[in-house]
Length: 127
Image (cartoon, rainbow, N blue to C red; front, side):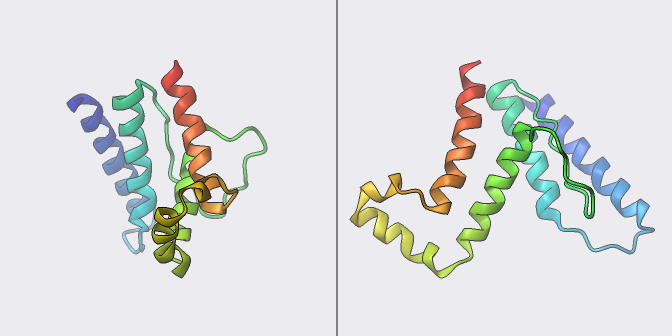
């Protein structure tokens, strides 16, 4: 596992260095995007033997017209989970789920976001 982790760490360092140098050092970096890509690469390689080739989304880049990649599907799902986690309802949700477990089957945004990740992971694990 160490070689996969080292390679992903080096890729993270290279991405950050290139981004900072491209902006002459005067840039604010949203580290979450970079760490998420590195984490996804490590999980994919170590856990599934799959290289997600996760990239940090470019600001202002045109949206891809083709099918979204596994990495992009998981990244968008994670973003929705984080966004949902910042709402008051996310504080109440664990209490409600413990009281009414069948609610996890409801088509709530949080459940749909988790479902997308689950589908990708299930397909990759099947390989």
